[in-house]
Picture 1 (cartoon, rainbow, N blue to C red):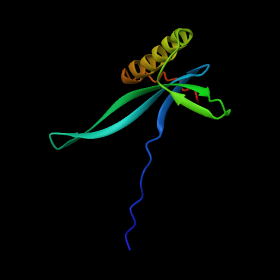
Picture 2: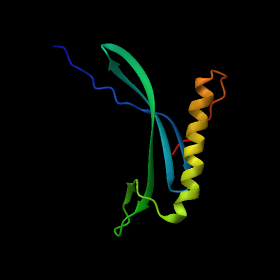
Picture 3: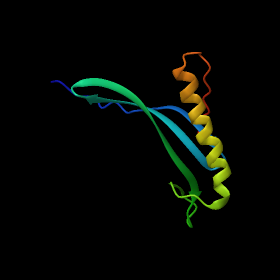
Length: 94
């Protein structure tokens, strides 16, 4: 019997400032029948609900904006420096 194993796409890098986190993902897809890879960045803010359970959202409060700017700049720097092939990478685990 042949079992298919589902491969979970793990983050390539994460950048966190307080409750704000930007995650870099490596993706693959097909363009005109040719397999290609590309990177995406997801963004979230963690918070606790009224029951004390951790949740996440992409909505920001005004005080979140400076931290959002920091993690998005770090994700951008990571992608640009890595694409230049200079070997300088930084990974921060969320």
